[in-house]
Length: 374
Ligand SMILES: Nc1ncnc2c1ncn2[C@@H]1O[C@H](COP(=O)(O)OP(=O)(O)OP(=O)(O)O)[C@@H](O)[C@H]1O
Ligand SMILES: [Mg+2]
Image (cartoon, rainbow, N blue to C red; front, side, top):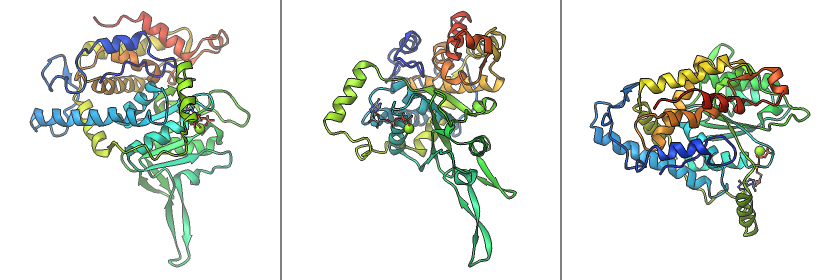
């Protein structure tokens, strides 16, 4: 079903998400149009298996969508609310992109990823990024084997499908860099030998927004290695009351045994194939570009979104279109994903920052000013 959420905004459904939801009435899972049925654009990419019957592809697409939608229900077994964060995570998984989760302490960032990992039939590892963590603790290192008298590579936790890089800004830059490199290259190079990481390989990194003593901010120039930056809001009053009630009736956040695996690599691959078949009208592509160009001209920003950022926004918008049960992207999909996909790819001018401007605020202004098609 459609989940009208405003991704990463922080305080629940907003006006844009409402628009995105209304744009596709009756087109939830099962109601979507078959490939090529609408003629609203051209497939950007031919999905693998395109020679198969459209009916078969449509069924696979719907099964995958149902499985990925079920992830949300599993996560809701432990986490109250945070719907847009869960949707953002599913979109990132579909795009094989990395996620940066930002939120004040105690907003269930860790609990969310741990629950999601249980709901996914994928290999999962967690690394707590402490101040004394070394690059080799993340990527792995060569160890001397006495019996063979040779060095052999011992894989670090990065060799997994889903890696929780918890509190990434508590570790010094050298260790952060080793992870950021692995994220970009999808391989680890040790002593001249490149070792490919498993597929999928998705990093979910968490960080606190407040500058605590002993934290090392991630290098801004490398932040765009994250496909999305999701802000984890403090729950609403009602959500917080519901959370307390759960705790009062015996819920233990350390016991995740009620959470069942509902999706795995096969569903993600089928979902990805379906997303690749989502039609893109050239007008919507132009809208993505206009938004990104506007960030480059904004007087509040010293660095706008790069062309890489534009491709990221198109990718997340297409994934959201498919998750919403459509086979074409709408301007509202682009709007819904603009903030989470772009907020960490722009840099405020110091003057603007002093005046209290935020990346989200600037992006909001741009979304309000750049005319959307139709
Ligand atoms: N939305 C929520 N739903 C259910 N439980 C919640 C929610 N928000 C907070 N909690 C409770 O707060 C606890 C703290 O959550 P968690 O450790 O995941 O926070 P965190 O955001 O990772 O914090 P930190 O930044 O300090 O690591 C959870 O174990 C849970 O009991
Ligand atoms: Mg945590």
